[in-house]
Length: 420
Image (cartoon, rainbow, N blue to C red; front, side):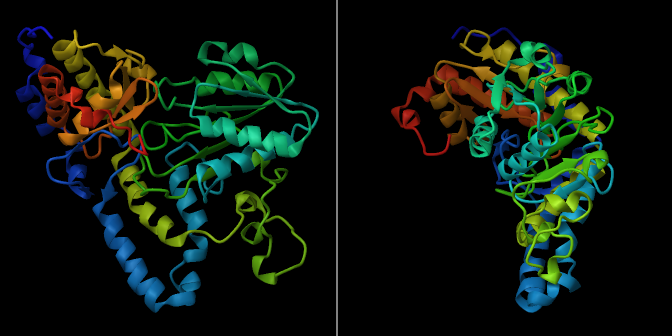
């Protein structure tokens, strides 16, 4: 790799430090627990732990579980957690109170929501999806329609093809707002309008947008949505997801996973199911209380920071990273796999490299944690609540050193781990 020319002043480490000094979100960095010497650029996959989450989890385990035992369902408000936290999340995604419930994982929630949408369009058989997106969404819907056995089919369409794919035979449009690999953003308002125009319903996956950027579900006329809390909302590994159902649909929606928590009177213990009113009918079984409690701290931080400020800093961090990679590693074989315009991508940047996997493992060995997605994608997430601009400069400096020295060619970094 050729010696790079001197960097312009605005790309110097001193300039990054100056940006940190003026950063209005800087105080939030102290609210997270991260290992010393680690630059964490993987919050798009799993957010780090808020310090308050650990303290609150200890309190819940020791006082509410160990001492309060079963009485904590009432005394500690455990039973209302799905609704209370759902309302907190609603404020982050452009929904109203009573339209969001926190529960289970994204895959289960997607199964419920798409099943509800299909039941509301019984004479239609087509589901539009973006085939290149995170495959579990495809798998869930493939399993759903096979189970239903009613002749539903998935019409896969990539970004530029989606609008044309939404025709009057479509029952549901099931899309992710921010692509898990490339980070490109779909136009939620325009696509939802197209679906309404032909009588189809929309189900949006917000896993890579909730907490990373402003979302306006009601402003865009969205029908249903799901999302997770373990990425940009920093809820912890496997923390529960959420479901949104627009108020206008709640009286009519039905779901296949009917359970006692979604019953109109769960403690009447009736033999037969009767759905709860409102969003509560989308619940199924007993909720994972400790996981929900741990997730509340991250939701609170996101709400206090404000998504406009969060989005502005995330874009600035990404732009700095992209500019530094271009300036310092322009001849190292990295191809941009995300939209070049920060306004058209979510909270992470993807690069393509023929040797992406060993490069990422070498980076991690030096304390810079991103991730790899087969076959050649390496991703870097820019969560603005715990990252400094100087961290971005330092991360690219480490990447430059790895490429210059050829460290990534060490055979140890070619060994594939179980989780990539």
